[in-house]
Structure formats: structure tokens, C-alpha cells
Image (cartoon, rainbow, N blue to C red; front, side, top):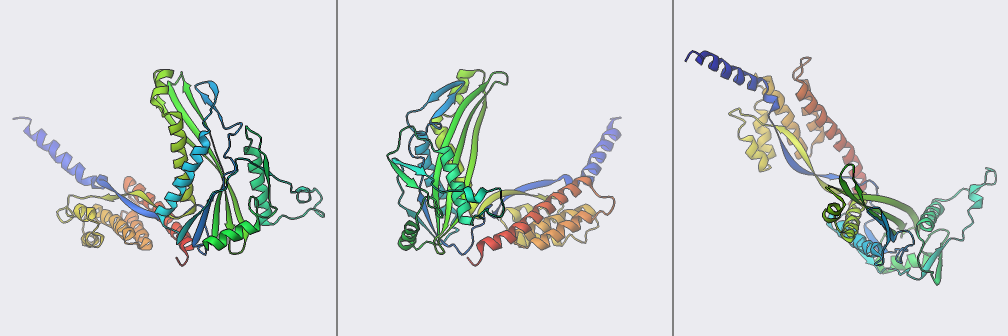
Amino acid sequence: MKNRPVLLLGVLVLIVFASCNTLYNTKTIDIEIVEPSTLTISPKFKNIAVQYNNVNCSPNKYLNQYEEFGTQKTEDENSDSIASIVYFETFISELNKQAFFDTLIIVDERNYSTIRIVDTIDYTPYFREDSATRVIMAAEQINVLNSSYFLKANTTSVHPKSDSLIMHPQFGLYTPGQLQTIRKNTDADLLLSLDYFGASDGRYFDRQLELGSEQVINWTQWSFYDLVEMKYVLAYSKTDTVKWMEYSSGLKNAADILPPRTDAIYNAAEISAENFALTIVPHWVQVKRMYYSSGHVELQHADELIQNAQWLDVAELWSKQLENENQNIVAKCMYNLGLACEMEGDLEAALAWVVKSYHIFGPKKNELHAENCMEYIRLLSTRQADMKLLELQFGDK
């Protein structure tokens, strides 16, 4: 038993070390917050019409080509036209799920299978080197120019088209009469028109890295029309890349473990559609938040209260420890009170508690705790900025 004092000393050191490092005892929870959209649609637009207006519905000379592990192939099924329907329907589903607009009306699609797009607008006056004679473009004309440039660059049909649609100088693919008809039939304030969808894809294998990959690039263009003031508000082009990567012992194995080509194209269309919907409307997202747990007898009940979302009760529990002589406990409770305030929607109070927690140790700050506080302060500051943007986006909704 001569080693007993050494054993007891070791246990004592472990206990002291654990008590000194109580700020290492953390847990995380999942919470949901509202994030603002990247594009801000004016809150005056409450009733939205959406139309499938895809000019790229026929086999495309370039997009029907794809690479299959080093071999260039041509498809017969026109998969990106099918993917465009998947994209459009998923977009509508995601908008309905977010329930941001008062009404969402689907306008009957337009068929461009025999129609080619023609731009007869003379842009020369707008690009003259002489500033004295150069004509300034209106916002609507810039949208038409952007739309026309994108469509001409990405629409090359395999088969010749028998009909033509001439771009309108102010409204692009629409005429004023068509927009007025949509307004009359739907009572919508804003029209979202999917003018273009195209998908290019390929499957690849890197022998050196033993890595198989599959990539789908979705090309889209949307047009936004104010149906009340009859204005072409925005021509918005977007490119999305969706990629799958798998380690593989050989090319044949890569072909087996990667998604089938058409599955990848349709799945990528769904992903792109969901992402774009969240680009234009505020939406709920799940995020993680950290809090300090404690073995203190009066704080052991906190975890259960948090799991039951009893934030006022757990805040009361933490508040009672603010006069504790143990600074570690005070620092933890102040930090946790910041989380409770965030969950109750008071971001200003949340920031104040976390800042107090950061300064509790004075110059001899705990580095890990200081880092935790600074990270949370950054998150809360971002949320404050987001809330101002959300107020603008929701308006009086």
C-alpha cells in the first residue's frame, strides 16, 4: 500500500484540474432562425405569378453533349428539358413551403419548340465612343440587353426553328399586351418568368487520386416584371454547379458508385431550384448554438429545461448564480444568458451578456472562453444586421 499516497495525490490533481477547466464543459443544440433572402423583393409585391417560359425546350446543340469518363457522347433523350420541369416544379414547391407571398399563381406555360429568339434592336447609339452622342440606356433596356445576350449565347437548337419571336425593346420575351393579360387574369403584382434552363454534365475519373466525380452545371435565367407599373424589373442569370465525388479503386467501380447520369441531372435541378427559391425569399434555417453545461448542484437541472425550451425558467436558474464567488460559473452563466435572450428574440440583451462574460476575467482572460465569446458576438452581430434586412423584406406583411 506504499503507493496509496501517490494514488490519492493523482486523484486530487485530476479533481483540481477538472475544476479549473470547467469552461471546457460545453454542449450544442439545434435551433431554427429566419435568414433574409439574398435578393430583396419589395414587400409591396404580395401576389406573385410564375410562368414556365423556357426558350431552351428543344435539343440544344451544345448541351446535349456530355463526357463519360473521357469519351464525348451525344444524348437522345433531351434530359435538360425534363430537368427544367423538375426545376420549375421544385421551385414552386419551395416557395409554397416558405409561405412568404400572400398568393402564388401558376400561369400556363409558353411553348418555344418551333420558335427561335431574334433581337433586332440596334444597340449602336448606346455604345458610341463619343459621349456627346451616346444614348443612355433605361433600366428596362439594360434588362432586355442582358436577357438577349444570355439567350443568344446559350440557345443553339439542333433542329431549325420555323417561327420567330422578336425581342421587345422594353419587355424582352413579352409584349405589353401579354403582361397586361397576365395581370388581368391573375391579379398578380409581380411576374417571375423562367426564361431559360439548361444543364451540362460529365463524369470523370482521376486515376492518380483514385477519385470518381460527377458534375452538373445548371444555367438559368429569370425575368421579374412589375405588373402594376408595367416595368421589366430584373433579368437575372445564374449558374449552379452540383458535384458528387467518390473514392474508387478503378474506373468501372467509379461508374457503379456514382449516381446514374439522369438521376444526377434531375437531382441537381431540384437542388438548384431550392437554392434559388431561398435566394428570393426569407427562410428558416437550422443552426447550432453552444452553451456551457455544469455539474454544479443548482445548475444540473438546466439541460432538461433547455431540451424542453423552457428558456425563461433556465434563465432564472442561471441568473441566481451571477453572485457566485466562482468566476468560472459566473462567466458560464452570463454566456448562457446570452443564448436565453437570443431564444427570446432580444439580440441586444444577448450581446450585452456575452460581452460581460468575455470581460469577467479581466486581463487574465481564459483564452478558450474568450474565443467562444468572440465567435458568439460575431454570430449575434450578424443576426442583428439580418434582422434589419428582414424588417425591410417583410415590410408590413
